[in-house]
Length: 569
Image (cartoon, rainbow, N blue to C red; front, side, top):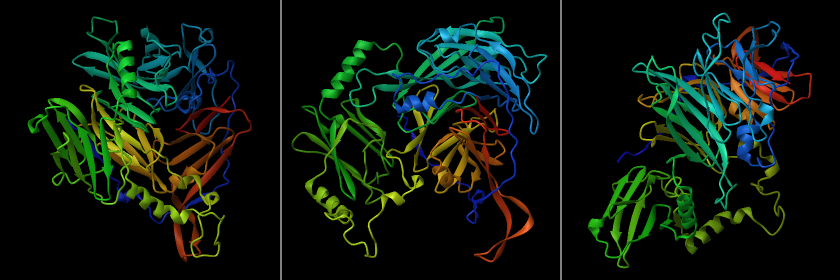
């Protein structure tokens, strides 16, 4: 039975700078250009029924300025007239007039229940486009870098249900069969969710193919859906189309298409009222799992497989419990027995003694954790010094109580840590998992359009950029760049809306909702002598921080992360 491998990200020490001095504020002027548009950007604001945090993450913070990574001097936006407008941006020159390259056949304003139109540049000659009403277009563009040969022509056009936005797309050519894989995101209502927000996130993997050179028609050849409870920070196909990688707070799983709705509703309702599948307890050294066995169960009916990070329990040929454990165990010392009361008792020996597990199997909600009175007493004793009937009873003691007002945002960690998962395109199962822990996700950027987008994570105070590779490679995630102290610096920016870096890693930039853009440049050699007074040594290079303040208070709708162009409309 295939088991997802627990992996880790390997940091390249030579890319870290433990002697980083910090960013020096630079007052060098930054060029800022203004351009009047004949039609406003097609902004779609959240409706009253789009009130959750997931709606805000997916649609409320949407970037309306689209970068063509195949031709990095070109950026695009969609206006209220349904036109896709192209801007050519050159360094230190004024912006040219936008030119129309394509016009949507439908009237965007006629649909009340729509999302923002989205576009993804699949290859140097293909574009995936959503009009925000639930219709997907695949467009052949010709060579977009040359306006003489550029001609946008619809090659596929189909209604796919509820409105969606496009997350990623790739172009594939295998055995003379051309296909395009697209990843669509929806947030849909879940009527039976009594405890949560009432919504779930749907990622639909659609493959559209042309079977032969003679056949010019493109058709949908594959549709798969993943469901989760949080909007993914990052989701992208591998270049060969054999896998999908997702970074998210809550896990995603594939679901079967065509499942009978009433049957699934009955199953969901029965799950809400049935008893826990198992009970578990823990001490500092081990965990005990208790499972009530069916009548007449024998030792031959039970199969328990222990792996360092995985457990698999089979009862009478049926899979009872399988998944990745929260932490590692000593699988050779772990045991199981059948008790006199016809119950199965499993003892898991913790590899990391003293570590408290918040869950037994990652993502599994079928069990119930039981904490005995001795554990409650021990926890209360540990927390006793944090509570008192008096307010700050002894302010002069050596270690006064913590003042919550002194905490910074960067000192606060999320209740749930993110995970990085790779899904196999054929089996639709998770093959690799990385628990990111306190490595907060920051942003993604396309360094090479032929590769997957990179993602940036916070590691302690720094921000590290990772390049994902195909799932067949040993080094699946490569550390390619470091932005010194940026993990700490960005935490104080409470109004940040867009965040990214230049594809050559020369700078990272953070854009707020209104007016300001902060630019953090990598250390460069100094032309003049500069000394560190505290340490009495010469500083050979310095990193600069620049601040751009726009001359308007209108909200920033788009952000382009190559030549640091900002669109404010």
